[in-house]
Amino acid sequence: AVNLVESGGGLVQPGGSLRLSCTASGFMFSAAYMHWVRQAPGEVLEWVATISPSGGYGNTYYSDSVKGRFTISRDNAKSTLYLQLNSLKTEDTAMYYCARNRAGGGRGQGTQVTVSS
Image (cartoon, rainbow, N blue to C red; front, side, top):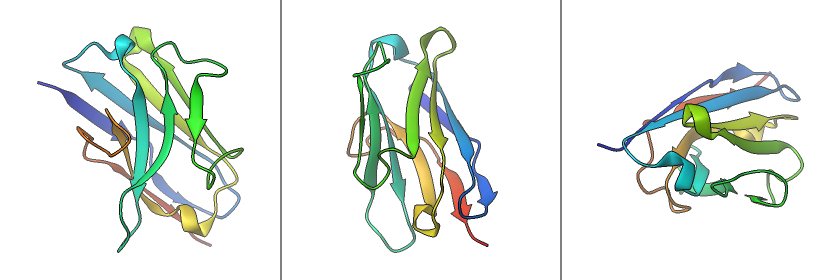
């Protein structure tokens, strides 16, 4: 069965950083586009970032709201997806999910990121 498990969330002050991880199993991770999406309280699910199967420069894509602050990456040998969150803002507060498509399909249980002073 496909399984995605996110971790690394927490409480951080504005301007701070976090690194989220997502461990995948049950499918050929190294051949899959992977995505991060998020959902703030009372809001719809929002696409955050995408990485191609090979990853690397030119093969990552970001929403305008996080471009220049967040970095998506992957380690295919470990079947793990990452999201580095820098220069965090209060509006980044949300549940963050890794997912198999941009709409959030097949996402895991999520990891909570709270940005507050």
